[in-house]
Image: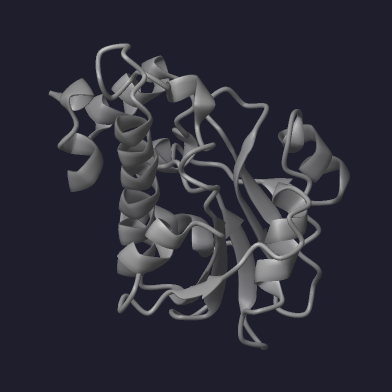
Length: 209
């Protein structure tokens, strides 16, 4: 597959409700809502910086109803689509995929990958000619789902998503892909990501110092 042939959908939950298990990680356990929202936003924006730096990405749709996220992404070339289904992650991904240009392979990427590097994402996107997925570091979740042009994305994110995607006919990606596999749900995850090297917004929070 040549470069610039993959469209990605990235869902970003409302910052006030996102990453609930990380509450307190940005402020020493206090759990201030504003600081938590800052962390959730940092994770998403650092992820999207890596996406926008990847050579194989032709288009990016962010599905979100959070106005702060929309303002932060203004002028980046990302298309913002409101989560009009408001029916969970998989419905949001299908809604976003419908907004991607036709003729592209497509993928769904989680928004909590602050250690993701553009070259690493490009390595994974080499496999977008087949239906494939990347498991998370634990091996039971999914961070990236790919489908060739003209093939339904058919997302099955949620508990046990790796097994569900494999059962649906998608093949697991091989290779280390450490930043792509290191999603961040807990403070321990965040510290692991920081040790790998995260984007500047996440790195600026005290938990990475």
